Length: 403
Image (tube, rainbow, N blue to C red; front, side, top):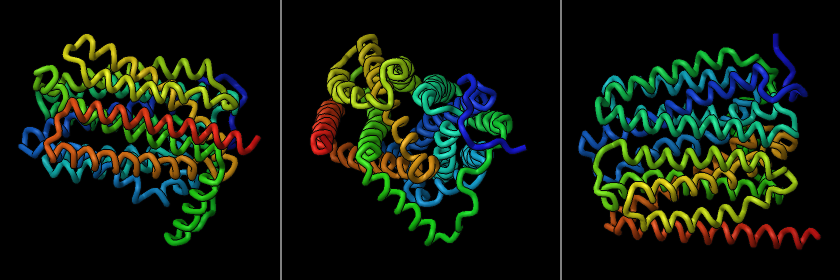
C-alpha cells in the first residue's frame, strides 16, 4: 500500500531511511569503483592523458541534457521505484563495459542512470524526514555516500591493479545489490502526479523552476555554492591521477584512490560537524570552510610525501563536508515548498554538472597545453578560494539589501 509522501515524526533511522541509506551506499560504491576501473581500462588501452577527464565529461553531459526531465520523473512516481529503475540503467552500463564494449559508451549509460537517480535520492529525504531532521538526514546521506566513495574508489583501483575484469565485475554486483535494496524502500505516493509528458512543456516547466529558484536569494546562494564545490571536487579527483606520478613518483592505480579516500574520510567528519553546528537559519556559517578548501588545495599541491598528502586531503574533506551539507539541506527545504523536491534537485544537478563540465573542459585544455601538474593544482586552489570569497561578499551584500 502506498504511504503518504510526508515526513514522518518518528525516529530518523526509520525503515524507509535505512533502506535509502543502504541503497545509496551500494549505488555510490559502484559509481566510484567503476570510475577507477574504467580509468585503468582506458590507460591499458593507451588513450591519451587528456581523455581521462573526457570520460567524466561524457557522464556529466547526461545530467545536463536530461535536466529538464529527471526532476519531473522523480516527482511523478514513487521515488524508491525511480531509484530502482535508475540503478538498473547503471547496472546495464557497467555490464556493457564488462563485456568489452566501448568504455565511453558504457559510462555514458551509467551517467543516464545517475542523472535519473539523483533527484529521487535527495528528494525522498524531504518525504521521509521532518524539517528539523533534514540537515541530519543529509548528513547521513553524505556520510553514506562518502563511505562508498572511500571503499569504492580503493576497491576499484586496487582490484584494477590485479584484474580490470574483476574490478568491473564488482561494479556489476554492487549495482545489482542496490536494485535489491531499493525494493525495500516503502512505496510513497508521487509528489506531483499527473503532469504532462510533452517534452516541450516539460522543458518550459523545468526552466520555470530554474527561474523560480534563481529568483529566491537563499536557493540561488545554495545553487552557486554547491555548483562550485562539486565542479572543483570532480576536477581535483582527476588532478590526483596525474599529480601522484609527478609529486610522489608512484604509477599504480591504487595510490590516487587512496588519496581520494582521504578526502572521503574527511567529508564524513565535516558532514557530522555540520549536522551538529549548523541549522537552516545559520547556513552562512559554512562559507569560511569553503574559502579554506582552496587554501588547503594549494598546500596539498606542494606536498612531496604520502603522509603529509594524506593529512592535507583529510582536512580538505572535513572542510568540504562542513561546506556542502548545509547548502544541500537549504535547497531541499526551500525547493520542496516552491517547485517540488525532485525539480529542485534537478535544477541543482544542472548547475553542478555545468560547473563540472566547464571545469573539466578547462582542465583538459590546460593538460593538453602541457602546464605543470603542480602549477595546475596551485592555480586551481587559488581560483576556488577567490570564488567562494566572492560568494561570501555577494551573500553579505544581499543581506544588507534586505535589511
